[in-house]
Length: 387
Ligand code: SF4
Ligand code: SF4
Image (cartoon, rainbow, N blue to C red; front, top):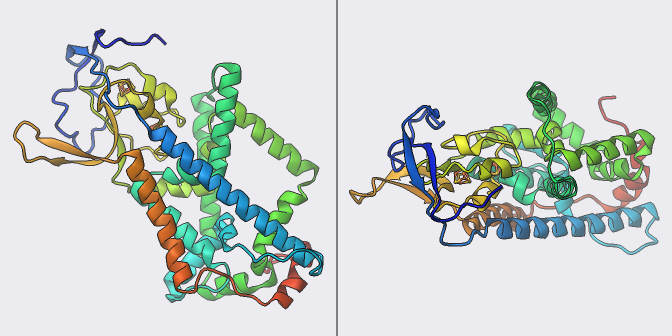
C-alpha cells in the first residue's frame, strides 16, 4: 500500500456537490462511469484519536468485568464452602452476562410496569446497551463488550502473524451471517410467547435465582465437547475478523437491528475522498466504506477504524444527519460525533442506568443468605423449570 503524498493527484469519480446531502434512498457513490475529475488529497490536520479513546474504554470495561468476575467467584466459593471462605458481597453487575434474564425482565417491566426483583441489574444493563445501539450504532460491540474486545485482540494478533485476515466466500459468509438471527429469533420466540406471570415464575424458580451461578459452572465444567468448541471458536477468531460477533452472537444481532434506527452513522464526503480504499481494508466488518456515502449496515460497530486510517480531511466522519447551515457558502453541515463525544455518551448511558437503579434501590437482587447457602452448592442439580 503506497503512501499518498499531499501533492499526489488522483483520478476518481466525482459525485457532484459534496456538501449536499445524499438523497434518502441513495447511499452509494455514482458508478465509476460517472463524471471524472482530478482530485487533490487535502491531508487531515488533526491526528485521529478515535482508537486511543476506544481502546481506553475497552480496557476499562474489560478490567471492570474482570473485577466483577473475581468478586463473583469469591462470592460463589463462600457458599460452596458453607461459609468457610472469605465473604464478599455479590456484584450485581455480573448480571450483564445474563442477557436472557435482561430481556425477560424488560418484557416483564413493559407488561406489568413494575421493576422485577430477581436480576434487575440484567435489565438495566440491557436497556443501557440497547439505548446505546439506538443512538450510536453498534458501539456496544466495539467499545464495551468484553467478548468483542477479545475477538478484536485475536483477529488483530492473527493478522500480525499471518500478514492478513481471511474472508469467507460470499456464498458461505451470507448464510452464516444469518445464523445469529436464527438464534435471536429462537430466543425472541421463547421469551415473546411467555406471559408476565410465566416470566416471573421462571426467574423466581431456584434455577432462575442462580442463573448466574449456572453460567459460571458452565464455563468451569466445560467438558471435552465444550473445550473443543471453544478452541475451534478461538482458532477461527485468529483467521476471520470478529468470527463470533459476525456469525454467532444473538446479542450483537439484536444490537445491530436496533442500530438501524441510529441517527449517527459513518458518512463519507465523496468530494474529499481520494478513493484510496484504506477505510474498506481497515473495516472489521468488511464493509465497502470507500464506495458508500453512509454506512447503514447492521454490521457497522462504530469502531471508527475507517476514520482512523483515512488520510483525507473530513472525508469520513461519524456524524448525525446533515442539517442545512445558515451560511450561503456552507449549505449543509454535519454534526460530527468526536471520539470524546462517543465516550461521554456511552459513559452517560452506562452510569445513568446503573446510577438510577442504585439510587432507587433496584440494582441488587436481595435474597437471604440462607437461600443462597442452599442453592449455590446445588446449582448443577437444578433443572430448567419447564423440564
Ligand atoms: S464502517 Fe467503519 S465504523 Fe463501521 S465497522 Fe467498518 S470500520 Fe468500523
Ligand atoms: S480512507 Fe476511504 S474515505 Fe478516506 S480517502 Fe480513502 S477511500 Fe476515501
